[in-house]
Amino acid sequence: MRFATFTMSDDPRERVGVCTPDGTSLIDLAQVSDDAGRPRWGDIVSLIAAAADGLPAWLRTLASDSSARALPLAEVRLLAPIPRPRKNIFCVGLNYREHIAEGEFAGEAGASHPVFPEFFTKAPTCVVAHLDPVPRHAGVTGQLDYEGELGVVIGRGGKNIPAGRALEHVFGYTIVNDVTARDLQHSHKQWFKGKSLDGSCPLGPVIVTSDEIPDPSRLRLTTTVNGERRQDASLSQMIFGVAEIIAHLSKGMTLEPGDVIATGTPSGVGYARKPPGLLEVGDEVAVAIDGIGELRNRIG
Ligand code: ZN
Image (tube, rainbow, N blue to C red; front, side):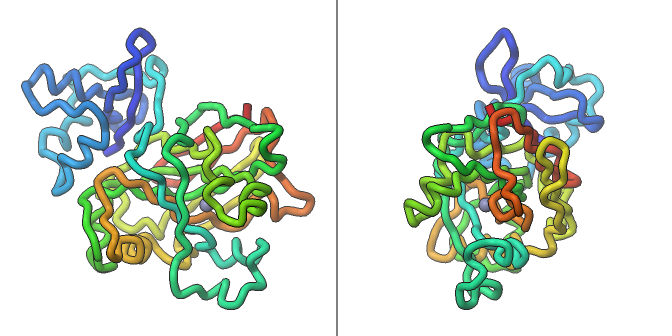
């Protein structure tokens, strides 16, 4: 199933929707819940928490219920599927060997064969939706860059989750563009500031539930800038796969429903290109992962 968060043009309240199988329409969960006296979830994180041990059967069949009133996508405004995560977005740095090789960390001892994943976070305020503009932040950064990544949305929470059970804790998958101000990343000696400018976390367009993606390592990711292919990788090239990331991150630290993890970017980022391919006003970045969709944003 595919879940989205959206608003209507005549009503700014956030709604949670289920995509119809053809992907052209959304069924408003609040509407069908009110009609049938079912639980009403005001936001998607509440739904994810309620469905931690599995989605209710009626919700599973809803998308194919032809009697449910579906809203054409053209009539709604998509928000990020989790418009305001309850905590920072967890991120993994340097999770593809070719990305390490292209970057400034290539010469560091053990860089290409790390024992532990490198974690950092992005502020929840930087999340924006598919098609939202990403601010250029001229005067703040001169080196705005893209990083296409698989996003993992935690379902059932937990701590000390073994890798062998980790995928049972995944509600679904989405796409993240981990937009990065490279000069801030370098000058502040710590990644958080350069990764957290407003608008620097395009997320979406939807969350695809994990039952549709039993093995995320089989997916392929591409990133284009103005139609030019910049990143193209199999997710099987990750140094730490999704299960290992969850196992490491949850050691002694509780993961909760709705937590988002960006799993790292493959090679082909802008600053490592010769000449550099950094982002300017008007550039359009599209990150696509097969089985999930395409996340597209213009620099504005
Ligand atoms: Zn990243």
